[in-house]
Image 1 (cartoon, helix red, strand yellow):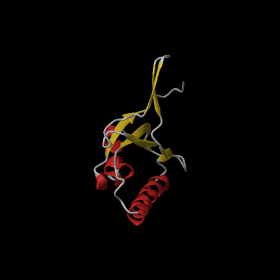
Image 2 (cartoon, rainbow, N blue to C red):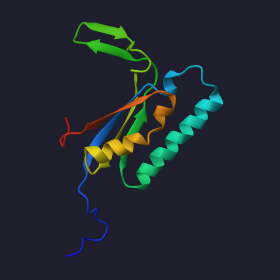
Image 3 (cartoon, rainbow, N blue to C red):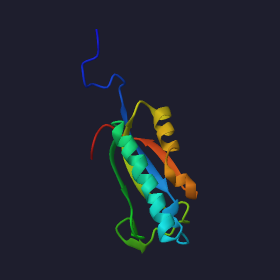
Length: 125
């Protein structure tokens, strides 16, 4: 029996890529260097969308704040720039190995960034 038209024959799971560091944490980059790097991100994201993988993604802005319980709110998070969460992306992959392969194509490594690959649970809170 053949697969129905328009359905992906490989069951997919949802994963999140959590980006840390990278060009966003490198203030010494010139505007043109940063723009060239951002364009690599757009191309990579569009490639994933073209494969039907990309679900959502966003970069983070500013230092924000950290809340620890009801009483303590601090400016920051003041992590080392290489450890600072700079964005995330939710996407579809056949499994963890496939998700890791997707993460290997991320442009963040060009400037020392890292990518954490995490499976997303099937329910929303």
